Length: 164
Image (cartoon, rainbow, N blue to C red; front, side, top):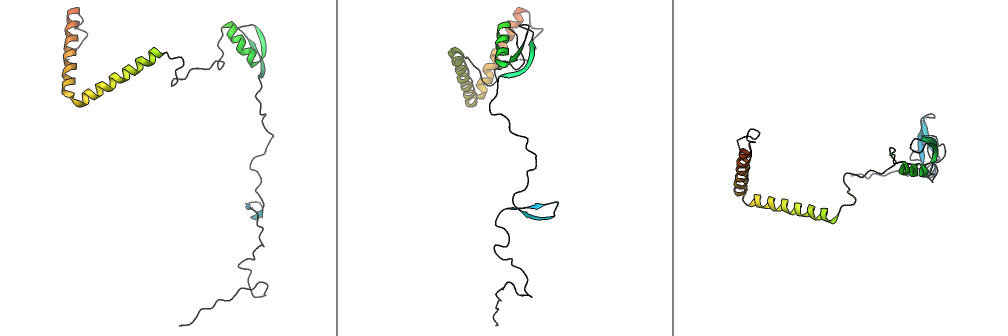
């Protein structure tokens, strides 16, 4: 079999193409596609949106002057507005923090203990039902019959279905 020999590419000859391009011919920096020029342009693309300055880093307590009906005067300071709300007993939308539903603040130790007891009782009931569901159902049926008899004696049997 014959050998395949490749020719070494030499740049600058009149019959040679410029492929592969010479190293360093294209800039080593970043480039982007310019839609107006319809070609690749070296550098970073211009920003998509105009910058109009920066917001201040500090939030000031000042606000547009508004008339507070509770104290009957014009106020232009948020802290003063909050104090006027407290003095007059007014509630301004957004002036007080609302307690979230998930977080309860000020829960006493008695309430925590009650919650733990209820949790233990529910876990115990679940465990008992899983061990012997027939006994639990019989117990509930017996309790229901007792309550139906008490309701019948009290004259409330018309309100309760007899299918207990």
